[in-house]
Amino acid sequence: MHELSIAENIIEIVEQSAREAKALKINRIVLDIGRLSGIEMDALKFAMTSMLKGSLAEGAMVEYRDIEGKAHCTACGKDSSVSDFFSLCPHCNGYQLDIVQGKEMKVSSIEVESE
Amino acid sequence: MCDTCGCDGEGPAKITKPGEDHEHIHAHGDLKHIHHHHHNDDHEHEHPHAHDHKHDHEHDHGHDHFHEPHHTHEIKLETDVLQQNNMLAERNRGYFEAKHIYALNLVSSPGSGKTSLLERTLREMGTELNFFVIEGDQQTMNDANRIAALKTPVVQVNTGNGCHLDAEMVQRAVRKLEVADHACLIIENVGNLVCPSLFDLGENARVVVISVTEGEDKPLKYPNMFHSADLCIINKTDLLPYVDFSVEKAREYALQVNHHLEFIECSVKTGEGMIQWYEWLKKNVNR
Image (tube, rainbow over all chains, first blue to last red; front, side, top):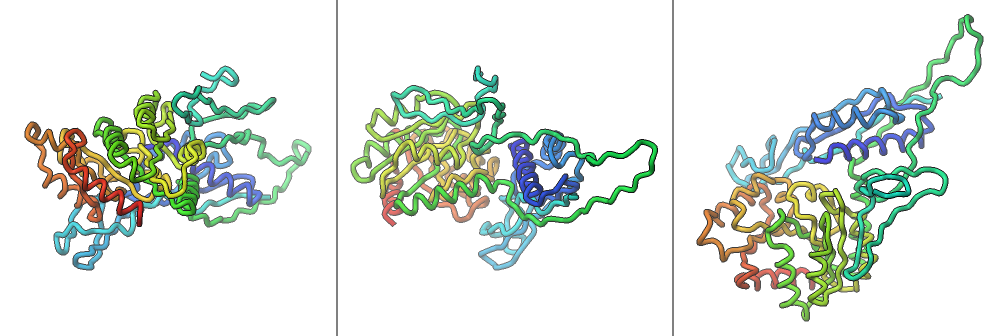
């Protein structure tokens, strides 16, 4: 949901950073999008394509890093891979999972061009 | 549509006290056109106009000219995409802490009974706790007016086309409301089980309300919201004889999505179970 405003936020973040670095343009943006973040990847890619135009990042290469979900089971203490919020622990079948990875939505880094 | 700049007013939400004229916050530059577009946060900024990135040194045509390659470098950011909202939410949190305000974010589908729950709570607990309310809806003052009728201080946030409250709207509403120290601030979010889950308001706890008419698999269908909540209120238990709803299953599904969830079952209409909600409130407000 809100992929368009997420894309707007991303552009703002990278442009501000580029301006602070007195950069001319942004060549590359690396995004970490967790599989449990609630973001629809295709919708985000589409939104980014439209938001990049006219910005300091126009024409930039965007790398979308898909961060997998990981959970820690507080019942048996073991970790597992998860792709949703409702899976049970594959080791003990318990529901007491705490998500430790996969909810992120980050701009990891940018590559800028300056004089 | 705003006749100053032609924008659709989708920008800042409107925050109104019952009985007041609509305050249409619309900041416009005098000469420059400051373009509003819908952000989760309320700030205006100029778009950087596309400008010529070409080299601005002159050279004659036809001569070979060696251009120095531009210097490129990587900047590590590790910046949360929602940092703007989250930073404001933390500011709200700090403000609440300093003033000993206990803030609740009340979320649900439209029609689960949030406002009715609030009304009954204010009527029955209004002398024990000092309540302040922020109402969130796309349009109308209806909910705020219902709360105002109970003599509780309230403001209405109208998001227009927006589908959730955000930290900036809450900050503005809190200022307008002039929330007292040691108060219990209840923020009734826009009825929506999807979008509000992403937006931290700075609350102490998030309460998700579902009613027995909505289907026991609600938590599985809307996992993000249940995962982000602290308390789940199952309302309209008086209707259990008439619907196929297993409270047991609903709790099970909800726990699968968030094993930290607490549960309260009640009927706002008959009053059954409300005492548990009041106990929970008192325990948390007076912690």
